[in-house]
Image (tube, rainbow over the protein chains, first blue to last red):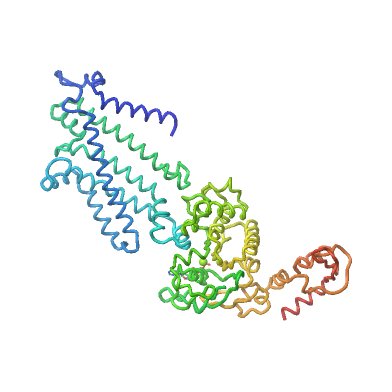
Length: 251
Length: 313
Ligand SMILES: Nc1ncnc2c1ncn2[C@@H]1O[C@H](COP(=O)(O)OP(=O)(O)OP(=O)(O)O)[C@@H](O)[C@H]1O
Ligand SMILES: [Mg+2]
């Protein structure tokens, strides 16, 4: 990353922190977007609290997706699980093709309003990228490398932990990154079922016809997405460097 | 010592290894040669049980390999494959330390062993230990592959076309280095190749395979003088046989009493070298000296021809 890129990221981070902790400082910038003396800055709750609960649900859902998707990916690439590969692929794909809003509609009667239905939607939505990348990462490991591992007397578990997973790690991380970014955006619709999150700001803006609110909610989500995207990208590159691969091979 | 007894393997309807038996003595190099698809790799992989034989068994120092757990067996047998199969995510030092780590050696012992092997393979530890495989040349990767296979001091080393992807110059050097190291450590080696020159250069004995069968297992010179089948004769190269033979026999075997003019040749030189020297100098004979330089006889063009006629008839 060039020096300019680093400075830009730091600036984005500072802007984000400043905005969610002291949004009133930025009132001047949003005032022109309001009409009829409407408030320029979201005033129905703390932006910081909303951001944190937004992040919390995204992190929890992604964590759950990661655990299930990686475990599933490992299982269906073992000899014992190979026959379940097509089945698990289609199941995970269904999770993806189901619109999140429909998941919410189905989940609310079952688990009630609040964080739970949102968590379920994000969890299902996050599975596919991680699962597909886990599969890709594990199946890309060269047969020759695996043959050498077997020939040196590594058992199945040692091959998985010492060879297959470390080699697949950068690809799996890329899947997790994709999943987090999707979830950050998708989590905003959670506010329609009363989950605490940045969607509230946007919805409040829509209801009161206040463009400033809509923009604020969108801005915070976008900054979060950019920063998390880059942060996880760094982790991927560190993992790839452990593979001895040149940095530029991984996007 | 390793005894291979009636090993057979089939995949579906095709038999890939058909009732192969041979014995490799302690500290010997047995080279398995044959055309592509002859079953060489399959045979080799049955020795460390990467492939399960359909029939037959392998004894290592008298012990049936099936009586040892697979992984344990492989910890004791070095294995080098073409392309070396180095772990791309591990440094040279970590690659070499793989089996010792699996065996639970302590850190210091592993580090010492890695350093010892890097030295043995002429890879300066401070320069190479922390490099990743992709930062090495083909020849360096090859050396790391062999060093890794030797790390836990196995008494037996299996090598499947270990020099296959090296250019001819580096390949010759790598073969010489392997011989030196093997003589020093006394490791028993079974090596697969389809390069006949390599087989003659390295093999104490050569096993010729064709279409799943072992056609002949013999010392290199016997293979030349008494090929068991037309295929063996063809494989060892009819036209090149005399020259191959010359490079297997030392001056000692064709030496005559007497003396000659000129710079003496050492008694351990091959007949091939002696003949080359004679032709080059345009001389009928050269004096022969022992290791200390003292003259002990002579070698002549006639003598070499006579020796050749005797062994080929
Ligand atoms: N796992 C397998 N399943 C089915 N057929 C196999 C398998 N492994 C090897 N074969 C077949 O067995 C035959 C012998 O293979 P092998 O690899 O032992 O030959 P090779 O002598 O080592 O050849 P090369 O010199 O090309 O490496 C080939 O025809 C190959 O296609
Ligand atoms: Mg082969």
